Length: 197
Length: 238
Image (cartoon, rainbow over all chains, first blue to last red; front, side):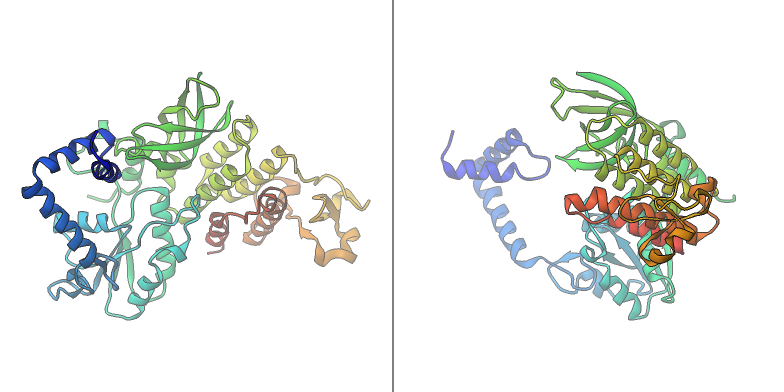
């Protein structure tokens, strides 16, 4: 095959999620064929992004400015705070445009097995934000997994008695979902979280 | 190599993009790991949550290999515990302690049955008592069982109230007098059976099993007791 530059390019592309060695070769070849229209702009974009994008010191989101655009957006409700595991969860919430508050990114979940404790997460800054005042509700939107819910309960404990309501997003039947196709765990959770009609 | 067995998921770590490595406590094959292709997918992830009871099949070309798991959910214990902080903490603690204690691929059907029973009663009256009994049984299976039948110092067997932190043998109230501050409290429910009367008794039971787990199982590996267990104890105090 080609020289060491091509090998290195394929090797690096192969480290991206969704790309194995074979698809990395395809992508590399495609980039090389579209050198001017795609490869150079992509290289510049990667370079610029690596220099400019940083984690927001308030919420942990990724943006080119610090504090990020969401934290400084005055149209958002400053009394609502949504706690998410990672930046991709924040992006998922933003995609739906259903939440008009602000966020706090934990950077993971407590993990009994992997030894991830509270100190490894962005929890101290969450408590500081709550103590600073101005919040009326903290919505914990961690995953419906054992680790995600352990983290949610831990957050509820830490924020108890600090004058803020702590809620969590619901678990259960997805919109458009049919009961027949749901796994037993989701069904059980949905049944437990039933409410009056 | 191929076998089918029922198992309880102890852990599931993401591996690659869509897969995960699950460790199950199976009835006949002990603590056994295997790769679950597509286990991290939206459809399969709920099955491989710690605490879930699954019907599993394991396949590999050679017995020494990691092998592949496929499985079907039997009881979604994890989902049932998600909303209950003490239950969730108990489930995590049980899975982590067993995962860290039991050797791989060595059948321990008694531990499997005890864990399944514990998961089954979670949330019901006195369920936390069963956690103490689970750890007591685990110590027994590992060869560090406590002797709570007679007094190590020759005292009367009907007045046992303490346990020696070194030997794991019970000591009667009278014989324990000179060493009382150095002994561990033996909660009454471990002698008479039944449930712990209050939180203090439960705490004494957890302190007792925690001491011997730490001494015999975790310290030799230079590891502390898992933080999940401490969180479980905290959640019971609230």
